[in-house]
Length: 249
Image (cartoon, rainbow, N blue to C red; front, side, top):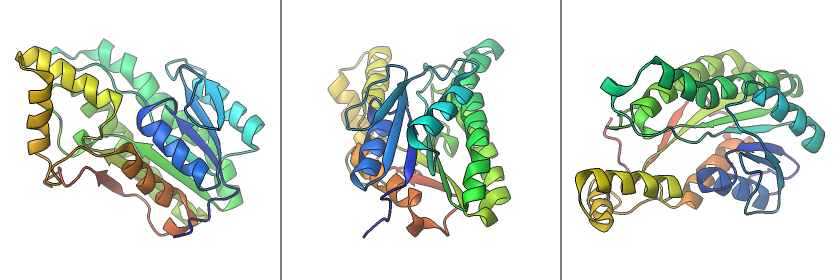
């Protein structure tokens, strides 16, 4: 299927590795011009890069300015932030929530708002927000992630209805157990806390996935690329799980 992404301009956050890098690579391979943002300012592919910490108060404005300078504007925005440290709900207080809310919620909302007027004026925009399956089924031990990503979903679903008539779609992508560095780090921590070998921990995790395996980041990126394309013009306000059938609801 031809996705008609040639000439589109894509801004991808968290593009140095994992899901962000896979999405940036997929969009670039389909002909889009890509600016990848990460703390390190590096990327595994042939696209423009920018170093920016999403926790900085002026991060959204700085990224928007750089995108206008480097790409000439943005047609596709991929909101993707790193995950917070594991935590139990009973141990998670206001300070921890506020600290994680800046890079995972506030900056993403402000960046989206900064780029919206140009998308609406041009009659085309694709806003994709990478969150987690924990939004629908909270993941034990990830209270911060479950809480903040759920808030982000609330904002994006509300926004989707407001801008749909302007040619701007807003969708949320919920990864399940995609085999990234982040997933391996989480499995490592769980194995250590449980006092079991890492291989046993990962084998147990696979048992709960109907497809019988972890996902490949490229599979996730393929769904993102479709939703970023003109082909997906009638899909908006959706929470799409890419999880091998893991979610039960």
